[in-house]
Image (cartoon, rainbow, N blue to C red; front, side):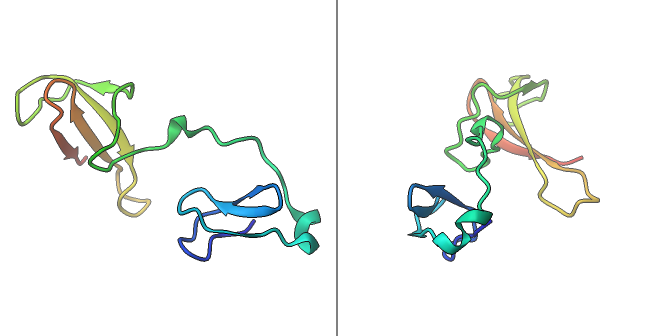
Length: 106
């Protein structure tokens, strides 16, 4: 397994180069290491959690949570481990009505 020198993400083999899907960095594939490369099936990105401002929540699971902006009682949510492993994960909500965003801590 090789990692990107720019951002630290895992490099993927694409033809005769190793390419970073995160930042686009690429380097030539080292043929001396080619025998040790392991190929896997394409990664399914359906389980990727997006928490940035422009994230597309539509189609994610919903929860009965009251929106702090419009009092709508349904919101999409994602879960992300933001603290150490012995702490509960953080839930990120987006109102299905007005699009307001907030966090939920357990």
